[in-house]
Structures are given as C-alpha cells and as structure tokens.
Length: 185
Image 1 (cartoon, one colour):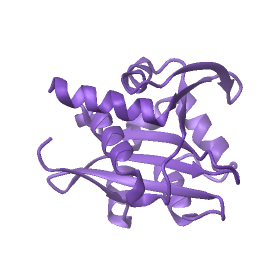
Image 2 (tube, rainbow, N blue to C red; image 1 turned 90 degrees about the horizontal axis):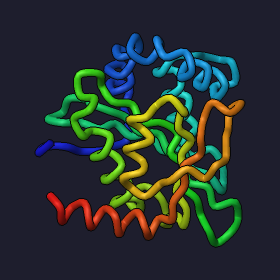
Image 3 (cartoon, rainbow, N blue to C red; image 1 turned 30 degrees about the horizontal axis):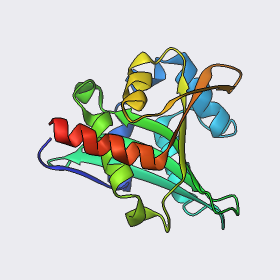
Image 4 (tube, helix red, strand yellow; image 1 turned 30 degrees about the vertical axis):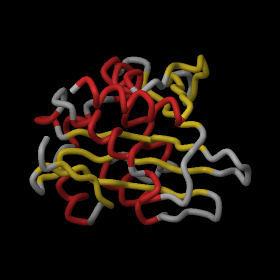
C-alpha cells in the first residue's frame, strides 16, 4: 500500500462503493444494522454513506466523518466515524463502519484506514478524543481482531439487541500501539 490515502468521500466514491453491495447485502445482520441506523429509510451502503456524509456536521457537539480509502486513486475502502464531545472535556470517537472492497479484504486495508484515521484526527476534528469505541458484530471475528490490534477491547456492553459487542480504548494507548506496530514493520 505505497500510494494509500484517506480523504473525504465524494459522489464518485459513493458510486464505486455501491458496486460492492452484493458482498455486504448478503450479510443479514449488517443489513439490519444499516436499516436501524437509517431509521428505516434505506438498507443500502450508498444510502447510508450519503446520508451520513450529507449530515456533516450534524450538530454543534457532533461531527460525522465519511472517508474514502484509495490506493493509486482506486477506492479500496471507506470508514465512517463520529466525534462526540457531549459538552464535556472528554470527547469520544465512535467508529461506525469500515468497508473494504471485496478484492482487497484481508490485505491490510482496514489496518491502514484505522492507522491513518488515528494519526490524522486533527485534520478532520478540532480536538483529539479521550476514548475511542466501536460496536462490532459478534460474528465478525476479522473486525474484532483488527480493532484488538489497536487496543480496543470488548467492554462487555452489548448494543443493537445484543447482536454487537462494544469495543473501547483510551486514545493515547492507541497511539502508543500504532508506534509499536510501525517499529515492527
């Protein structure tokens, strides 16, 4: 991944990602979660990403971020995250989704997207989070392993009708792990 970059998603990127929908639409749990988040409006990836992108920013204390990952200008993934400050001094980063183009799955794209996001948060948000969390489908072992590499561990909390397990970590610990991972390479 020599020419990898993470940028705000464009309409052209949404069209490319929409072509991957068969892979994700076959996942019944994923479709239910998208339908729930979209308030019953849609159950497709393009609709979800467009809705989240169009709501950027969605409020005074919350900001949606929808990024496309590209390798040599080819869209290979997308990541959706929110920053909440809940009017406290302890902002939280919530990672909604990571999508990887089917032909790029298990090739380090998810790891690269998370690394780039964590290292460049101030490019997109005013502040760095204190806590990072994500809700991961209990059957998605690959995602659980990926997030665990960054120090996000299950909090024991279940969400969306107990289909998902919440993973959580301190942001500073994530940066420490990223530094260690980069030294290993």
